[in-house]
Length: 444
Image (cartoon, rainbow, N blue to C red):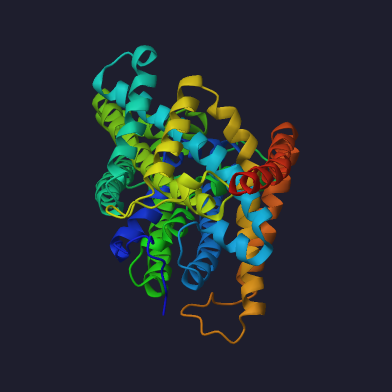
């Protein structure tokens, strides 16, 4: 039986809500833009689909590992909680320092700006004048809804996840209709883009990044009903749905635009819809992308706030941020702080570089987060586990080794960004000890 403190979160999320969080946390703007980048690193439609299938299978392996971790420790905070228990407070703080204070608000600022850009395009507002005010308004609105508790946030999230799935479905249908019975041409080789095996392997980087975001449900695990049963189901169902959507969307791009057309496109979703419906089609997909990005922001704010709250409760962040409102069961101060910092980054326009700097830290967090599974299996060998990842230790090893390889490849491709990411993580060490000293003085 789980025991919860008096100020614990209320478990109000059912399996449907949890699965929608998984889907909404993964599907943002990437699937509408990244396929063109992947196509430029391949020489046929078959290779494009193979890469998205491989990326999906690798991500599913990671998701199954997160399902066991979430079932073992169904508490708010996700990776932060696993690192704290397995490796101590300092490694957990370094993850929280990198993610909750930089990556989460940075990604919210970046995606909120993208939402505002597509929103302004869809309704005819001049982007140069209105992008920042609309982005700030979106962040403030999302924070305001979440202040009323997880149910209000879940309702909003479910609506926007259904809308983004509708946008993906529209893309798939449009691509298949444009193919006009020549669906096999989508897999054909394109001599315009002869690439090496190294380039093909490097194309897995943007694929995996587009599959990222599956960990947000674990950040919210303290609010999931019957978590030992619900978390594995929701993670598996949600991620399987994402893989199907991504493979079908890429097949539609290839069928409607061809490999060369996809590789040459800067906005494949808009180009596909424009071919099908004219400029009105581009406007429709702009609305779909706006819904998709808005939904992602809602999940990132909710999940990031739970990490901040857990850090505050542990005394490695402002103590006030560790409070959970007794009436709404929401981390209201943590939500306000995260939202305020995201607004500052949005107005300053400095979020893109921050995201580049913290990408390595984010994926290192996944490596060490799933690495805690080996610690739990060793130290709690006799404890009954409500869910165990199949093919252990093969699946976690495959995920850890592959993702670490992706990190190395990313560091080789952009050594400056990787170096800054490691520097930001290292800077957290003196911050941690300085904060501990300051906290002790305050207590005294």
